[in-house]
Length: 274
Length: 310
Image (cartoon, rainbow over all chains, first blue to last red; front, side, top):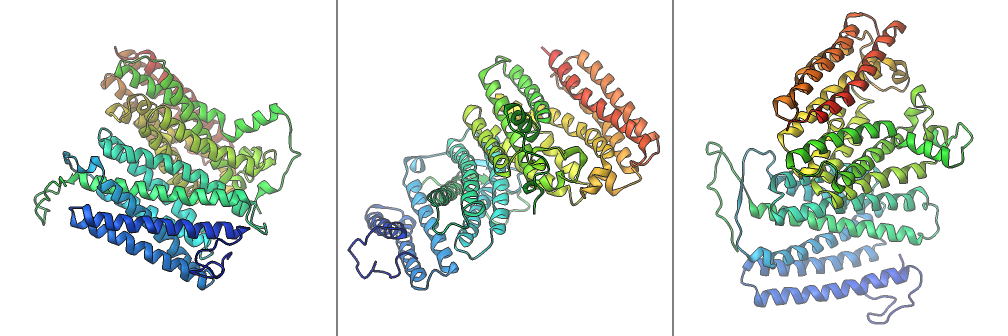
């Protein structure tokens, strides 16, 4: 732990400490976090003022509440000497805030606000919206396992098993989307991006494993390459989660799963053109 | 401790030995066969689409499929290096002899697999890339571990094994069509006589390594011989489907019938010999089935391509 106090850094709220060793990473992290918090305050207020959709205004405030919670978790993990459970929650919530912001960008995009035709899907199990939601859920669980491993709360094996499950589920999802809805741009693009990012993520994971465990485990200080490969792996993981969330949202919006009349318990939903 | 960390031979140096090691690591002969069957799929896809039979997309597809296939084979050798050390057939692989380091092999293996998928996505289409990734993952995550658990591994492994022509097809067409099912089915059924005969031949090797292939688990060999003959029989009507689906002409139909009959004949000889896999005399007939299967597939695909329906 490079900076032992919180919310101050070496006793000061505004002074920049000597940026040496791990302090440069920790204090830079705090400064960027403050800036992101500021941006999310702006987003929440702006959304409240200009957005017509009530649920979007709620989402803006939810993002703000989440970023406040994220700051508190960050402080708690410092003050309690980095317990793995709080550090893991801090790492996971950060990725979720990123997803909320990405979703808000999607909900306010021109493509979302334009009219579109809903597609009816028959005789597929699981339905594509369920499959894409499963893919996003698998990535989310995998991020938790990765964070728990990184913060010494778990061994590597659960994260490795998770990688295998995620790889298969994501490939299955991409094949489903590209074979059935290859002509639908809003579904095709995130599916393609998801596969490309998955491959990059597997490569970065392998690099992080080599530098952190196979060759760098006896290093007194983490090697630069270990830091770079691990940070790249975590960042790419956030991108995989975000793109899987976008795909799940888009498929839920665009695909209407046909339920046979005998099995239907509820009336079919109306098409949304928000 | 893994066997790979205990070199059994003096590391070889020089380009020639490095090329030889790479060739074994990526299972060059198997990879070549996979690329050839992928080419067959691409050939029929190009014919159906009315585009050039030789194109840059075809070249990119074959390179990408070759990279994923070779990379997957290499990952398999990295994962199974301890088992390979226990079998005569695989004891000379570079990770067993120590002529290649584990790091070197791992970087090549993962680099080729991941790079191959990305290459396919960028140069052909992302459906082919996704199918290639799914093929690789199912091979590594289902077939490879199941080999030590249950003889059903051969059946499970036949699914990724039958994918290359499908990949070739989607690389050109960008979609799955009914014809892909025919090409998939031929390769699916063909694998059982091929791999069961290998398991019969190397039964003692597999037993030493505790790999639970059918001839190891059922030592009287009846189930293996029955599986070989039944799948060889099923292969006959399946191999005729290209003509019935207007992919190939009647010359192919006659040739496929003849080749299928030959394959079935060698399989039947195994079934009727009533010998166990441990009997030395049975090995010759198993070798005949293996040789027949190795000759059958390239001939069948060559004939299918040469006698393409107009």
